[in-house]
Amino acid sequence: MSQATSRFEAIVLPHLDAAYNLARWLVRDQHAAEDIVQDACLRAFRYFDKFHGDDARPWLLRIVRNSCYSWLQDAKRAPMSVTFDDEIELDESAEITMAMGRSETPETLLIRKAERAEVNAAIKALPAAYREVIILREIEDMPYETIATVMQVPVGTVMSRLSRARGLLRATLQCTFEGKIRETASGHHHAT
Amino acid sequence: MRPLPDITMQPDHDHFFSRSLKLNMDRYEASAQLRRRIVASLEHEQPDWMSRASKFAQYLNVQWRSLTAAAAFGMAATLLGTNLLTITAGDDILLQQVTASHIRALMADHLIDVVSSDQHTVKPWFAGKIDYSPGVSDYAKEGFELAGGRLDYVSDRVVATLVYKRGLHVIDAFVWPATGPNTSPARRSRQGINGVEWTGDGMKYYLVSDIAYADLDELARLLRVRSAE
Image (cartoon, rainbow over all chains, first blue to last red; front, top):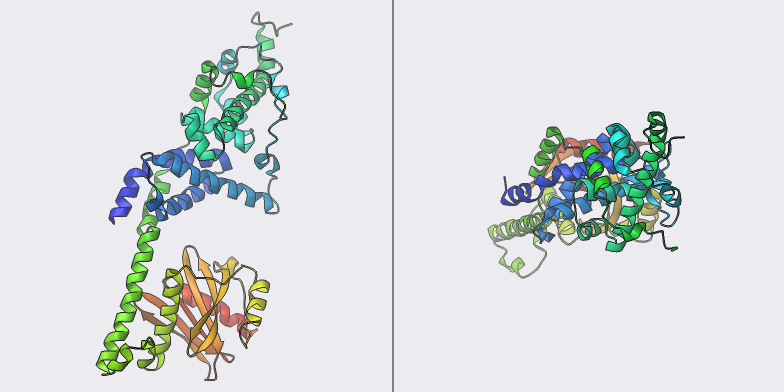
């Protein structure tokens, strides 16, 4: 094994799980995610000499997310595949109003009542740019500045996307569990 | 953009929601198999600067071999010229020329003059520059993606080079008119670079790459099927 290979394995490969997790959430397909991550790692390796930092994670994730977006673009072009229109082109100003209307129910209660699968389904249903910011923030615990580096957008955009993503999630989960809450009639004001 | 109601004003304060998400979200992990796949593929890969350096070393080596040959022939005078390649005989000259072109193209990042995977773009591009018309086909379905074409100087003439990509490897397919009899593909090797050459239908074909012979044979088969059509 060459010196470059062992350095790469020591510095970059510890972030393989983070890379795979991001790809898996973004393209929502196990095999595509694996191919993308392998390809991205090879590309990262080839340009390893251009990496001068102390944290390889954002650097690797940036390569991975760009590959994911290319894949989503290609999937969009390819016939016989799902339309990814809403995945890539984000309308920054719309769709949030409905998410904000009724935040009276405490989210914690919602989440407690939520089945794990339903939370994951709600995230999976988000547009890619919102999904991405949720993954980086909530799973990877990245600071806004780092997320901005990965996504190549200003920090302000990261913040607004994050609150919109959360708003959408709240709304989705609220819709899902409103029925249940009503059933339990737990003295909550949603109960009639 | 229309300002949104106070949600942007409370960037990260809903800790509960955040924490609940964290607790509930799946975190996918890379399988051991994927990890192995990646580590294995790294072994075949070199970082950009290293592969450039080693290609340059190979290139120097080619030149050095030419020099040694020149000395052996007692033709010290050729040391002054740059045309060292012509002093060896027959097939060797060609092999030397095409491998040198291949390496030089990789080294100088001058792989492709016309970048296109569309044969209908590449073919006409050649039309204005050389006095013959090489068959241009894309074999992406078979794993040989047409990446484009360029001009080279081989065998004392300007020739068409079709550039194919197979995975990360580059295959140069040199094509020029030939008068000799048809020959079957024959394997050549020089400095770790593999070649497969044949003559068919008045054209000389020379495939050059660092990939395995089996892959070159396959591309040769495809090109021959096409030219026989």
